[in-house]
Image (tube, rainbow, N blue to C red):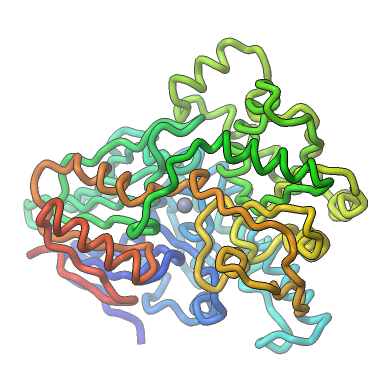
Length: 472
Ligand SMILES: [Zn+2]
């Protein structure tokens, strides 16, 4: 049974409710349906299973999709939505569209590879093993994209209009100010998307929201702040001590954002002669393309990065000796490198991708170091390493963890607790309701307490599939 169309303004939480993935918020008004973000559930088996369950809403009844940014936990369900009958349009800015054109086929490719691998090894829940969606389905979804302005107001319909603002999280990332017009009344709903960091390289800082009747705020780091020690100091230390003992540095990193930030810092450290010129392997078929997008979307660059670019002295997102590996053969060849090197590969949470092969090869060697540079969701390989696991399950084998594990929290693309509070402090008038989303329960609870203490706002932590009236 599908949820029936609501005649009144309403929001339903179809993902990122008490968890950090699967962002999907259904907004209804005047008999029309707008889905804000369309993410994939990632992490534990139980969460991933939700991707296979029927969506509680008939995709054919959704009129539009609107995206905050390109990360798969905000867009990765789109091919399935289109396959199941959604017929566009999907609204995003140009950078998000171009990133999705790389990320969605890649996500499909990984699903196809996983299902083929499962078929070969005979351990799939589906017989025969099927991918959640194919590369062709991802291409089909991309046909439904329509580009909207980066920062200007855009009218979707008589009921909905949106104004996007910089979120400072990844290239193209926005928080959205959605105006719902119903019976001559306007209601403002703010979707934080993922809020980035302040004073980070490359991208502009997050812009603060000023006004909201209803506010959805991500809470990934709602219970903690990032360490304040310098990222460059920490990176320099770990690279130097690992190289000294003859080991390599392996960095599971998302291709979008973290890889570029890492390259920016490594390049600077090389120029300041604070680290040796080690070969850097960026083992990702699309890293080159993503880096090119980062360079070409000047509208997202902060003043420091723009100045660096106009100085034109060097390529600020590439190290001295960098190898971009596209093919599987090239990737496997990295296994033969026995002298110190740096390997950057996806996925950032060790939930799939080529990083698994590198870790299977290099985790058992105590000379090596593994750097965790982003949020590690519950149930992910990265979380296990973060929690000090002695063995990591990879390819159905228990791989001993002898390498040094270093958690570089400052490299996170998500605002820490104080940064989230700083972002919220822009709001002038108490929202009628604040919904905390995109966080695990301890982070959500802690962040609710902080908001109540600092702003005295009403705060709700919605459940999966819970609905709220927006017309009251
Ligand atoms: Zn994100």
